[in-house]
Length: 354
Image (cartoon, rainbow, N blue to C red; front, side, top):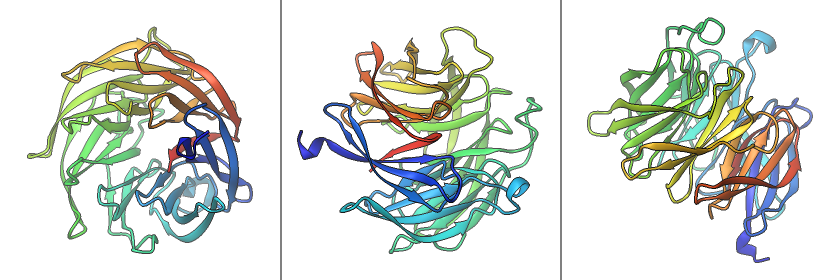
């Protein structure tokens, strides 16, 4: 086993503050084996993580809200020590909202955005040279509702993504069926609303990923189990819907889309289906169109989040309700995936490679 085949991964989960919530593991990209190295205690519900490009800093939400905790959620900055796989807390900032569920960094690694599901807003922070989070720069508040009375009674910002050229921030709001576009100036640390695009009513946009060409944006819609492809005009800062495809081979009203990723070579797209407990594997045509190939098992129950190994041979799936991270062998020819191994973990919800 070569040292280059060993990759460090971080696993976020739903846990109490006094129990291990962030786990550091090593993954062998040759064999598919995974081994837990260390766990971190001290953050309640660190359900989503993001790793800084320099590999030294990790950021974690605390997915709580005023309704049950009497305080807003927060985001914590941590420093990673690869020599002993330890995490040291640097500082913490409130997200000025409830139930933060997603984090993203801008292309320069100088800014972080936290999406607050409960309060329907997104918070922008500067990242200081020592990895700490600076004071809040902007709070982007959404308004409105959608046709689903149970899930769309108000705005629910679920994720955000910066455009490849770093001039726009796009926030997916599940509650109002909209992708809200903001113009972003990294040099000045300024942001302002540019426009928005309305998604299919009741679809509930959740997570997003850009095509390597920077032109197409794929959006996973949680509530109707679909993926929509948008054309992105980087000059005008405009999104135009192109087509929508189902993530299921047959209707399943108890299934809800979660995560979305492109294969390392950009030839395939994968989406996790919670309830159906499958991974939808799409093939990408040259024009960006999606063709559903197979929907194999995710290897457990309720695949909330997953990550793809850089060599394109494995998918690591956080199956929250079966308390396991499943390692699936990924066939990039479109055949599908098969279970390789598993790691026991309490309610895993996010997997990130260093």
